[in-house]
Length: 229
Image 1 (cartoon, rainbow, N blue to C red):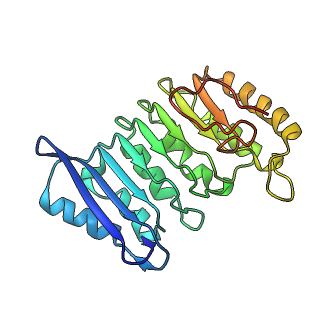
Image 2: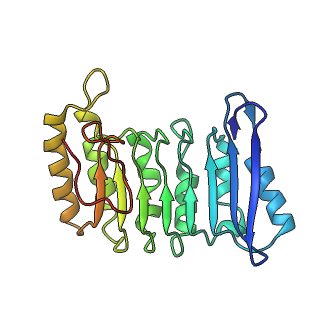
């Protein structure tokens, strides 16, 4: 995992002497942090399965993504946070394999701001569609076409426990300055909501740029089914 100067952290958090969280952060721009090394350290020290894994503020290498699906302690994750870790240059098949591995336990999946391109999406859809315990899914600030978003929404048909979900504005609604054309966006958002309601009824959903440039609102537990336009 590549990232910043010398501020690198690999932290294991325990409760009642049972490991439940591993946080790996790196907040600058040039050095590297071994995700694999952190996992190996955790494997040697504690044999309890992880419930929470956060990899944030850095760059994952191909070998980092590969090792995500290989460690036994990652087989029971409840919360996976990869927010703002750019994934556009990484093959996501291994991430898809990890989602399949933790499908019976995963409750929170945060892929916000990962710069995932719609051409990569198919690699994670089979795994995502199996995550029957998922309650929270953040997928905003990625690069998605309207067709890719429709495909993604259809693959959430079996995720009946989803109570909060976020998605980016489709590429077709962005102008040459990469800003939302609200007239186009309103039509496409309605189209996406029709697609979603054909397979399930959403609870709290946020489609569009975050924060909303109209009212400044961002996704939260109190968010109702709306977005200003």
